[in-house]
Length: 338
Image 1 (cartoon, rainbow, N blue to C red):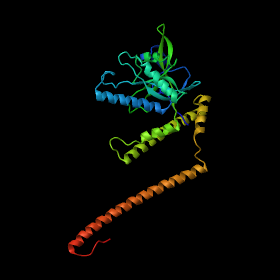
Image 2: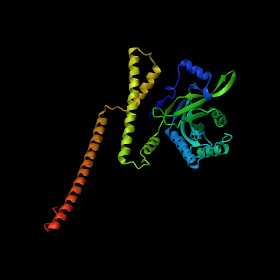
Image 3: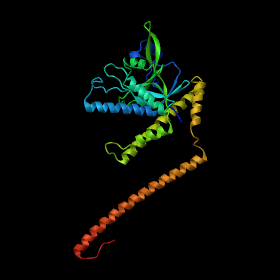
Image 4: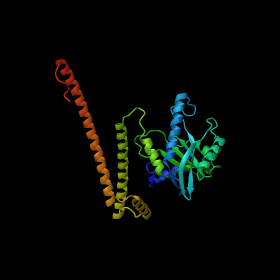
């Protein structure tokens, strides 16, 4: 099982001096990055659940014309809990469920939360409430109050924020995980959000589910060819991204070997561990299996082509017979040609 590392701060962090200024004066209660040393693993099911929650609430608000829960022109925010396990310094987020929030007072329905916890404990006894999630482009001032309300369930909850805005130029996932830390600001201690890195972790069942969702037929009645083209485009983009990341690692290792970059044993161990997870592609068994699958694919392609040609020839013969019978009937001549 391979994890895809993702650093949400790599593309958005300012230089060291600006980062220090961001910690001193955090906008909307958020600082630059976490220093807790925790490792977060996020499963795709959580992202799918939050996205589904947002789409449903947005569609319901559009149908009812209710825009009281969000600013004009802004989609309504959704809230929920994330659950999973913590093993030492590793926090793994497996699933999530929705929360009921009073739009007027901004308080959580604790009875609903306790009921949900009880139900999930019966099915997943090892899962605990690790924190909560919401949607939006950035942390809001009111988020810290919801965060504090969950501290009696988990003394150090995490906050997962999904940005539903579509950004075609963005290649990374629009998901950010925040931890809370107590910082002294203007002489008084304040609880603020700090960003944390995470990796995407999947199991076989999740990969099958995500693949099934990706192959669903479009609502506009798209053909099978359209779906195949979209699927192949997705595979092509994934291979391009993998190739670019491998190239970056290779260039970094070459620079390190030449002495242009300082030697980092920790990074070398991570690269070695990553390479050892990859299957060996030069084995004789792989070549035999690959050639067999390749030949089977070519055979199926040829059979499909022959079937298509035979169908076209049958249609041509039927049209010829129909035309010949009509002309022969008018002349009183012979019957059909075939």
